[in-house]
Length: 220
Image 1 (tube, helix red, strand yellow):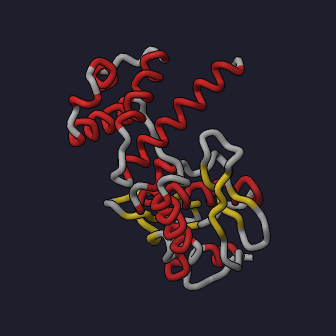
Image 2: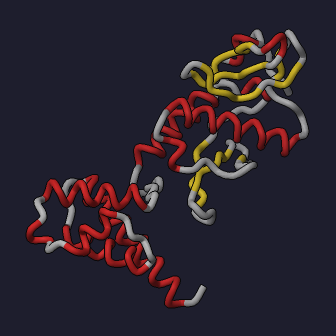
């Protein structure tokens, strides 16, 4: 990518962020919306909202209409705010980690894990750093868009941690004691669970309550 193209892309991304923050903080600058629409038009985006913003005089657009147009433009281009400008997403992910951390001692993992924002990934995502410094992010990081719903965040985190530990140790975890089968993080009936496929499938335990299902056994 040429320097000019990279600069234009960075400028567009910055305008998207400014418009999003303006909507979020209720101080939207109409000129930012116009500038973003013009940039997107140059990138050959011809949605109705973009064309309307470009063609109308901002003075003639009410704040409510400009807000609606700005939201439509961000939706049209699939703008997905990162953890830095949508901090509630990282809080949802940290809350999910506190839940699944209760299951880690059954794998012999002690200490308090932490969410680690992976700035070198594109798009920026999140992984887990264990108390001993080991990083878990196999299969790709948790993306911000996975963290709007607590159950989705918890399920995604359980799967990533499980796959990372398998790749790291080549040992299956967790294991259903009844069927001696590895179980998997899954969302069932709106709940994040450890799911076993034995006997047609059943819940071994909700994520975060694995020690009860395993009789508080800790695997070394």
